[in-house]
Length: 285
Ligand code: NDP
Image 1 (cartoon, rainbow, N blue to C red):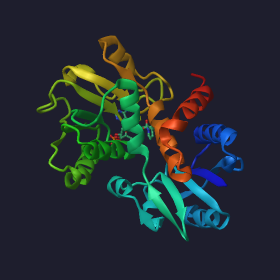
Image 2: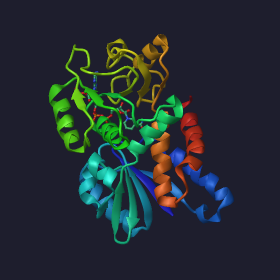
Image 3: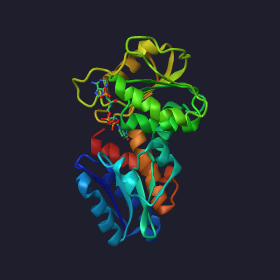
């Protein structure tokens, strides 16, 4: 049975290592999974529709989508899961009959990562999100779905922040969603928030921190969606201030385990540990 991740570029993806490790583990006790393999394909955006048709014709059961395909794929599926509809992005496809059904497991991934590593449930927790790009949108939608106690969003570029706030407004379900004005304290932010970095500031060693954590008062936890490098300036400041913190490896692992659950029916918590070990090994953690 064929599974794959599609991206452009794709060389950096850890998904083949994670999924093939999990499939090999499953095959040890269940012969149904003996022939399952997970591949990686570098596909440019204008070739995505043809690539998905080809994979359907070759009997692929599932596909993960990464940069730059997640939004484009929304228009290519025959059925869209409610979570993917709200996020406006798809990262997992399941072949159902003649077409693909689209899901988004990134939100599950970040919620599971924060719960596992910081012991914080998004439900009832005030959340500060740094960033307003694709990852921030997925995280924000999940926070609202989970019933967070208010959402504060900060971003470098005001127009991108305003676009995200406009996307979130109809999804807020009565939860207060506020933009943070540059250089001003976050209006109404209570103590005990979790701060989630969903910017790309920190991917390179010379990057500045996306925020100064002391601006957010007493913070309960800091989660950086970046996992490579394993420590960013933001996480270094959190450690210095004694705030519980974690990088984004758990998010990566749990979104992958949830995708595998969609394709195999095997509960995500069962395959997450072997996926984490494979990803950590590939990263040299
Ligand atoms: P986008 O390009 O869509 O968005 C980038 C965001 O980062 C924007 O909000 C941008 O602000 C902000 N930004 C970039 N540089 C800086 C800087 N120097 N200072 C402050 N803000 C900055 O990227 P994605 O949303 O797709 O990805 C964002 C991050 O999420 C990446 O680091 C990626 O590694 C991580 N991620 C992790 C995953 C995981 O599984 N752990 C999954 C997906 C993503 P502006 O609007 O001003 O340009």
